[in-house]
Image (cartoon, one colour):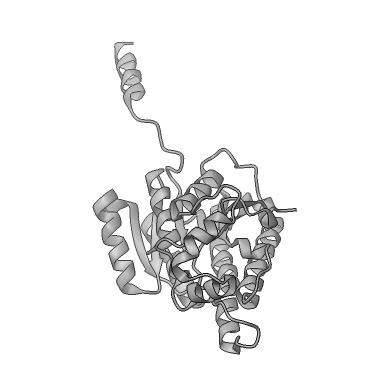
Length: 284
């Protein structure tokens, strides 16, 4: 009796498992910006992650940062261009080899192009749809194949955009690709429910801090469309929201955790706007 009382006392002193303990997450584009913030949040809450990026230097830097902060047992890496089906399969294989599988996917990798209808090229259009729409689909397809074999369900979160719901100037390619991502998410949710795989959407807006989408002329294009300077963009975006708040990568990470932390396990096909409150983007 004394032995069992001692063992019970030991168990009571042990810390409780964290909300994501035992979860294996792959967040596309997780070497920087929103993706890295999501991966960090997941690790802080007990998950292990497959860090990935198409930029080897950024990926090495992110890995070193994670190892220094969390230890080497919480992550592995994979070079991943979401337009490359072979690399997608290799990333899933890396997850299986390092951790035994994968059950939490965040389709975050993206880019942005802001041009008028007349200035848009076929190359622009193909790149947007290849990365945002086809990339989301083929990463999901590969992940679902693993999840179905595991037969324990899972989570897929797609980082889309307020632009999937709100129309604006100089945004035909990006905005329509984001709308396609949003409806693709709903279609996938409808199909994967019987397998216990939840598919949900986070719609950010104007996440400027440490975000790759503001490179390559996007900031200049949006500033031109709204008649402000690039330097004025953060304040402009904040002031047009109901809460008058600047949106940070950590805000998107928190929303991803809200969907996967255990309290919303019976929710799928949903959209959470993290945009400071843009009335035109209210989901109808």
